[in-house]
Length: 453
Image (tube, rainbow, N blue to C red; front, side, top):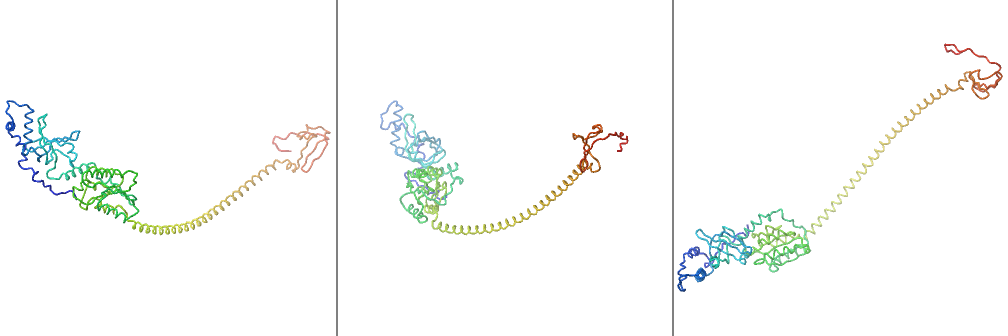
């Protein structure tokens, strides 16, 4: 991985722990404190605890090695951080141990975490805490053994954030294809900003660029970069893309882009972030968390901005293709419309013809039904007329019968209904006769056989 290796740190000879320095504590424990206390001090039969502690502190302060800043190699254990930010620990080797303190002001400048089992070079002074009579090394500098402090910090940050999932592809946001406003987070001096602006102006002069200048290396650089990313996420700026970049440099120069504050700021950004940090082999944790990582700042600018000329050509090509497609579509629909109209007319004519045949058939069936109905009604009427004629009294009269009525127009059914000398009317088939009864003659009752006389 580019940027992850660095040259082995060579400690100055004055600081390199010697075999004697590694056993300083053992030598110290073997000091003849009786001689130290008596040297330059009057002999007493008894000393107070404070006096003994003061003599010991003076002896350490006057010692040619212990009285100055000393570098000690050992393994950390019992590492604890207080609520005020101080770090307390034990520094040990296979045969001895000594307590150590890293005050909060010094601890805040550490790039890596102190953990149990970590082998370190500790530079500091040996001090005695008089209230408890304990002594410890007050560290002014700590470096890991065998690996640089920044390299260790890089690995620790990477492992911690990777465990949280910050580098997973599923969290990366898509880069807008046609950005209108781009934010640049980089140094306002140097060639990088000029190269990026030149590329953007050459490819698409219509893109708006907002520069947020920041420190890109050294103390405070990570805080400025993280703050700039958070600030440019404000909706007021209406940015489509953020580009975080700087030119090449050593691993130490680029380390601010691997600090946790910067990585978390990029991950939290709602605006897609493109990084262009260093050169091709260089690598930072900002590159790992970014939505897109380019090899250089110039490549980042080039990748973020579409070429306006290519867009114009693509637009012309697309317009031509669209017009051709529209013409083909119109022609297709015209042909389809003609075909469908022809089919519709043919279908309409066929339907009309079919329905005409059906109508004729229905008319024939209706007429036939009416004809049959009228025939039946005519037959029924003839039968009714025949039946009526059978009961018609005129028919009976036509056969030679007559109907006699008295002066009151009552039909005479018996000779008992009229007297001799009375006048009656006799209705015949073709008229009436007015008659006078001259005599009456009763008839014999009809025979049992029922035959008429």
